[in-house]
Length: 89
Picture (cartoon, rainbow, N blue to C red):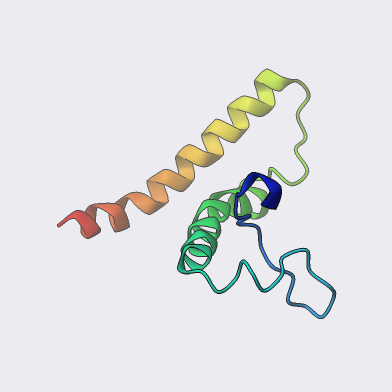
């Protein structure tokens, strides 16, 4: 990535092990913004796994699992809808 002059925006491992992200990446303001956006993007998938039953689905086939995923994400959007409407007002 560095050879292509691209700054990687991946999560830094700060749990005590060595991390692939070194000190050249983390001081930038864009890295902090990227990590906040990353958390926001991961939230629906985490909710789908814990509440929507996507961690261990009991379905076979791409169509059935795709429907369950769509239904789970639609439910997540309905839960978020009042907060989104209040933010617009």
